[in-house]
Image (cartoon, rainbow, N blue to C red; front, top):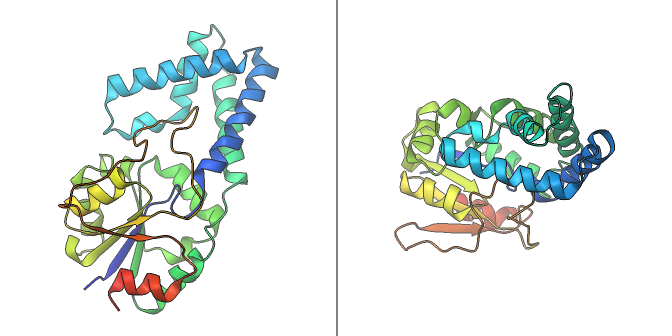
Length: 250
């Protein structure tokens, strides 16, 4: 019996892909206007820095998401001063993302119905905690959740099974009593199913970019999973009866 549902955040409860693309354009404009750095030069150095960061830290470390550090390194490679520009680049990007986070249509109704049925809920997300809290507050859904677990807190990134076991333990439940909903087959579905959770892929009908300039591409999409990782698919949060039936078997 499912007693708790964990939700991924980015591209699961809101459309990160669109917000990122708008924020990246804002960052490119800032660099061109304030630093006289072309978008081509900035994007080239950003890609080099992201590759260097993953090679140095690996992909199981939440520090790879830290844009303050990323922008500092890029400025150094471009021969530009760190202060005050790294922080201003950080805000140019994240403030624009926050201005464009909009809850997936029907998600609030699903969250409300799960709450009515006594199902506990939490967010399980790869990222630093501070920014994810800001997104949840901007989306206006914080009151639905009993907990927010970030990879920064867990000490590892999805799909590491320890992340999902840590999530279940935080709510005092066994993995088999938990469902996990996310947009990534590799990061969310494979990780959750591998840890013994009930895995659900959120795949809306409108396609979203997974490989985006200026964003780490740790899961490019388009992959398939072996039968040993069973999962169900949700496509529209508005279909409450269907979603509750799939999630809770009711």
